[in-house]
Length: 166
Ligand SMILES: CC(C)(COP(=O)(O)OP(=O)(O)OC[C@H]1O[C@@H](n2cnc3c(N)ncnc32)[C@H](O)[C@@H]1OP(=O)(O)O)[C@@H](O)C(=O)NCCC(=O)NCCS
Image 1 (spheres, helix red, strand yellow):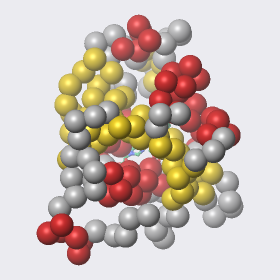
Image 2 (cartoon, protein in one colour; image 1 turned 180 degrees about the horizontal axis):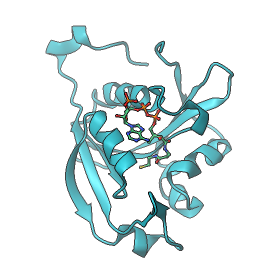
Image 3 (cartoon, protein in one colour; image 1 turned 90 degrees about the vertical axis):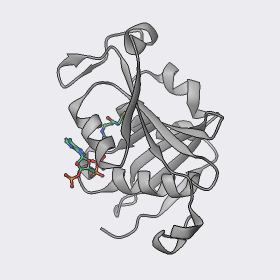
Image 4 (cartoon, helix red, strand yellow; image 1 turned 90 degrees about the horizontal axis):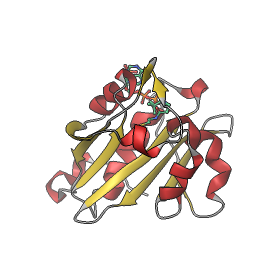
């Protein structure tokens, strides 16, 4: 696949709600981070949004990937992976680590591990305490939030190996 063109969205972020809900199905939870976070989108060859992601500044050199979703017809084509690689390069200029929280689901854990994240810690009962309905993935009710992290700090010595950052 060619390098994706990824844009930062500054206005009317809710027009991407349909995609954001694929990763986080309760709108009130998305509202907790959408406006304080940076929203990115990349479009497919048909001009439709293929992938969105939201990143927040959590302080102390840590940024957090709060949401990443790929439209169903674009999955397993490398869009999610390329979006994460782009975000790690971009945020690696100012942050040491990128973290991401997810439910205990085979799909997402396998995806984040494939993208260079390692397990860090868990928040017990996060899903059962914060969502107004049971969240089900892979046929299982999600309870704990699992946190993964990846070191992203920009290392000038490896500059030659990194692509351009928008
Ligand atoms: C998770 C998600 C973002 C992955 O995006 P994607 O563009 O399909 O992923 P990629 O094509 O970049 O996959 C990269 C690697 O991740 C792993 N992976 C991706 N989807 C997977 C799946 N369904 N099952 C197992 N592994 C998977 C694979 O190792 C894959 O590499 P491969 O295709 O060479 O085997 C996408 O499935 C999605 O939007 N899901 C719904 C929303 C969601 O769950 N978001 C995350 C919430 S925390």
